[in-house]
Each structure stands twice: as structure tokens, then as C-alpha cells.
Length: 388
Image 1 (cartoon, rainbow, N blue to C red):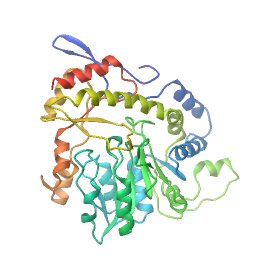
Image 2 (tube, one colour; image 1 turned 30 degrees about the vertical axis):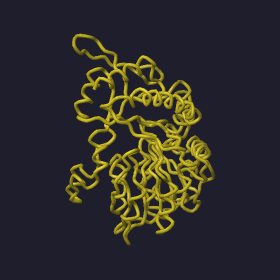
Image 3 (spheres, one colour; image 1 turned 60 degrees about the horizontal axis):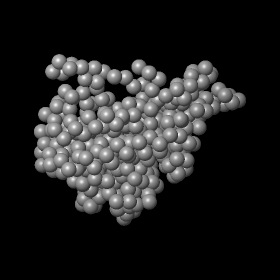
Image 4 (spheres, helix red, strand yellow; image 1 turned 90 degrees about the vertical axis):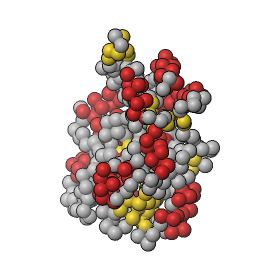
């Protein structure tokens, strides 16, 4: 494996060795490794100066007042709910087409997820259906910017204001996103991000929360580290002061090692996006002509973060295996949550409850989309998809 972390796997199919096209390759290079090495030679490896620098830079990039790094986007969603006082007996409106982390975080906070179906064109929560799902128990809306394309935040914000609801954005796919002149986090109480291994910038594991509410940010800083009012680095790099536990919190902080991996990637985030955008546009140009393949769309006046490129095909699992046999890395993002065993058992969901989410969930197939894709690889992917 080279310094960029990319490697090639080989397999035999019909007697011929095929070079595998990886579903994802991260952008960790020599600069990121050098930055981590500096941290490893320092005294404090945990949440200290490098993490604070990254938080400042990430907040500046998103034009947010505050950034609070945490151990995952799931942790970000969970702490956002807790900090906003949402818990037992409350309902949170969200989408059934996402990773399970979205509704699971609501359950971890003690609240109940209430699903609303999605738009057929984008896969995002249908803002036109939100209002009819609101009850006296509804306390928040948790939209998910699926695949990197923002939801209609202007409409969602209007609904939230009308009913005095909180908004927590699941922006795990959408750091770079923009729609109708609105950035991620601009119209919400918090926005939650992921730095998981396959994300547009990555530290292997990790996440962040942005907010423009200073009081909320102060609560989130405490909640991520047991509810105490001083982190370890401040206690030992300055004149010692006793800490106090002011609220019941969690152990959700990240380390300077992770933050060091992220700093240089953040500097290059727009460059990486431009490369993915070129690949996505080429996919769209070639694949929209195919009768057996449907594509989701990006609304007008929208800058997609282009995190995933999903095609919709009938007999998805059969198509998935065909692409794998040709050495192409694929994934399924996502099957409808309400039809997964736990949610069916606990909430008596059944097929037909959210038909558009089910339609996409039964057909969705993600193909490789990352800055390191080569032209010959892109051509091979397009050729293979055209033969499904």
C-alpha cells in the first residue's frame, strides 16, 4: 500500500486477471502523514491545539460561529438532540432513506423517529409532506442531505419557524453543499458531519457539529467530554485548576491525531470536489441515455457535495453481482430503514408505508466516485453499467 492508502486487489474471472476498481480511495498523502507524525512526537495526543485549529478552520469554511469535533456523526446527532433538550416522549421527523445512524441517534436520545417519505427525483425528505406529520409531541426535524445534495432547507426552515421546532441537519454526506444560496448549517440549530473512512475528508472515524448559537456550543463542548468544564489539555498545559462536572455528558471527543489527518484535506476540499464533479457529470452524460438505468437529479441552484453517485436499476442485487464480477467496487446506499428487522418489529412498519423510499431502496446501487479515479477506470465503469 502506498502513501496515499490506495491498493489494488486482483481476482480471477473467466480465467483472466482483473484489476479491481476500488469503490473509494481516500486522499491521505505525505502531508497528512507528516502532520500526524508531528503530533506523535508531541506531549498531548488527545483533544488539544491541533483539534482546536481544525475546529476553527472547519467553522470558517462553513461560515459558522462554532465547530465542536466529536467521535462520529452519530455522536454529533445524539449530542445535538440532548443539548436541545429533546428526549423521552418527544418526536423527531426524519427520512426513512438514510443510514440507520440517523434514526438510531433519535432513539439513543430517548425520542421517537417519525418518518416522512422522500422525493423521487433526489431521495431527500419531501418537505411538502413534513407538515402533515407534525403532532403535539414533535420537537424537531432532522433532514438528511442524501448523497451530497441538500434538502429544501428554506421550506424546512419555514415549517420549523411556524411550529417552533428545532432543526438538526444530518450533513454526513454534504460538507461542501449549497442550495438556493444557503450553506449547510445556515438555517438550522446544528449541522452534523462525518469524517468516516469513505467520506470526502476522512480521519478514519470522527465527526463534527457546527452551530451559530454560542450558548448551545458551550453545552455541546461539555457534553462531548463527560459534562466537565475543562478538557485534559487545558488542565495540564496551564496552571492547574480543578475541573467540575456540571452536566451528565458522554465520552465523544476526538484526538489530535485525527485532527491532524483532516487539516490538509480541508485545505484541498474544493479541489477534490471539482474532480468528483467532473466524474459525476461524465456519468450523467453517458448513463442518462440508458433505458435500464435511472438517475437521481440535483435541483437547480444547487451545489452538490457529490459524495456518492447512485444509479437505480431493477433487479439491483443481480446487477450488483455483475459489476463485482467485472472488478468494480459497488455499494448499496440505502435500503429503506422502516423495512429493516428492528424497525419493522418495534414500530410495525410494513411494505407500502413509504413507497418512494422503498422504490429507491430496492433499486439503488452506488458506483465508484472519488478524485483518484482514472479515465480508463471511468470508461470501464460506464461500459459495465451500460451492459446491465
